[in-house]
Image (cartoon, rainbow over the protein chains, first blue to last red):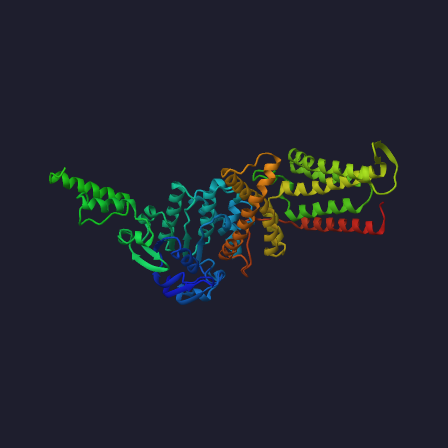
Length: 289
Length: 258
């Protein structure tokens, strides 16, 4: 579905490549998270997958990058509409600015694609229900809060039913409830066979639901694998990614005998609770406590 | 002041095709300005605009909006034309060095009534038509989606920029910028204008990306969420109204009905 082979990209004004020798294959239906420090190349990678970079930004590339079989460097974003959905960081600038209600804003892309009215209504109502936006349907997009606009931006991409969904920090303005709604919607997408690439810094939530985590460091792939492996890698902080609190706590507990050495370090709250409970039980049994 | 119709509002006028109401507003406006009889705009207002407003059930919303905007304009017109009418004319009253002129008052009356018809026609359109329906109707009648986009984006830009300006102002206030009083407000304009304009320019780039990824400008034939009904009776009515406006213009050119 997404296939990068030795792909590098340098912006016209850049002195060094924003992406270097990226090798990445994301199969259909996989939920992949990309993490990294500021300036690691996350937004550039999101732009390349969605066809925006280098078509709308300029830049020289090496290697190949394909999505749904199309060579991205030769396919403008307008030809990827319906195949790749993009949600950017700033929801305000993603509003069309030409629709007068949330419902109409959601339908904007479908209208451009010529989707039939009955199908359009069905999809818009479904997305509003999934993202809990139905009560706001008749409000102007400009009357919404930042978080609601962010949900609207996500909904505007979801409603197009793309084969690949790219989201660049989509929950930056959302509270815990809003974040939960977004992740639920993304998990539903994954279950429907949509490939999801999420650029996100809320590690605790993504550790629970993604299939794979890719770490970018200065434009290169620093690590790539299941969340349980990548997010417990001791080099994570060196790559500019804050380790999970559960993992840090467990790592410190190992040295003090409060975490079983053969037990993997946890990346979720549940795994941490289980691990500490097991260590406690073991200590009681052996008379350590 | 939001004068868009609520979704619960309904009447035969609400159900008319937006273009029919737009042509109506344009026709009464052209007629009011083309024919030069002093009281003609008032007659037009009472026999054409007012019955439509009553039929739409928006009378209670219509008059407060109309009066709030029309009265200050009418007063200004009366003051300027009454006192500074350029041609020699009969003096009705003298206030210090100023002379209130009869012909100036007549001209002001006619102008104010013409403006009332213009505002009345377009307020009727806005009170009974959702902007989205108007835009859909324009696109469905063959207007370029890009042109319609520019029109609707222009209608939206004021509330969007107002919201952003408010946010910038709050941020500046939090950093100690005094904004109370006239001088404070004037001084706050400069630090607000920079981020507002630069932010708007930055948004243009991101918005272009978002529009591209949402299929805007593709060669596909667009469809519409907002269904706009039309009937042959309305098409005939629009043609008749267009002919009426044309007749009024011709009458003006020929100098008849003065």
